Amino acid sequence: AQKVTQAQTEISVVEKEDVTLDCVYETRDTTYYLFWYKQPPSGELVFLIRRNSFDEQNEISGRYSWNFQKSTSSFNFTITASQVVDSAVYFCAMRSSGTYKYIFGTGTRLKVLA
Amino acid sequence: EAQVTQNPRYLITVTGKKLTVTCSQNMNHEYMSWYRQDPGLGLRQIYYSMNVEVTDKGDVPEGYKVSRKEKRNFPLILESPSPNQTSLYFCASSPGKGEQFFGPGTRLTVL
Image 1 (tube, one colour):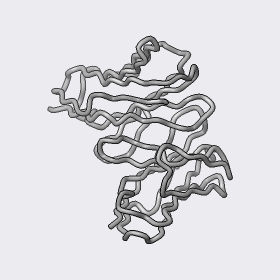
Image 2: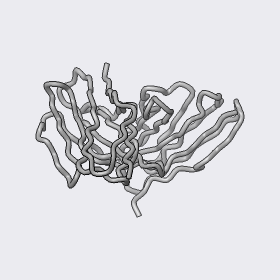
Image 3: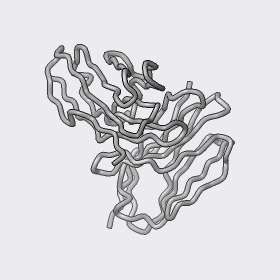
Image 4: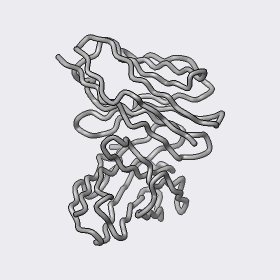
């Protein structure tokens, strides 16, 4: 069975600190996609990134970076120099190729304090 | 403007009274999906549709129905709502492999 685990329920950091949000997934499929979404206090869901299982290159987008490691089944998300606007709930998700069945983690609430 | 719309945004109803939450997208996406979000449980997929007249169950389909008669619309039907269906519901659409575009959410309370 497929599963996505976000063990960190809530994290609090002070502005300008770096923070890493963990995501561990389980699947027997060889081809799959991993995602991160952000849900700010306003409630909408915002897409951040998609990663294919055959592409283990890490990715950086401004202050955001993602570390995909198939060996540990992890797809961690790091925010560098956090800002108050980064305060949100972050969801990690997975989908296998050939299906549109998505599995989401339970989310990590990030609080960035000024 | 490219968007996914849901109606109503808020709904309070009573047990057993049939209701429909509408979802519409204007991006010509083939894929659409419904989720519910509950505290501590994250987002759970209810149903999804890969194209017109093609739907399949997600992880929590019990008590829900869907239909996809047109590409742009994907309504969620609760034939006999119960209090355990009180939740925040999101509709989403996607062109395929990439991101899902989510609607603004519908907060449903069943008394």
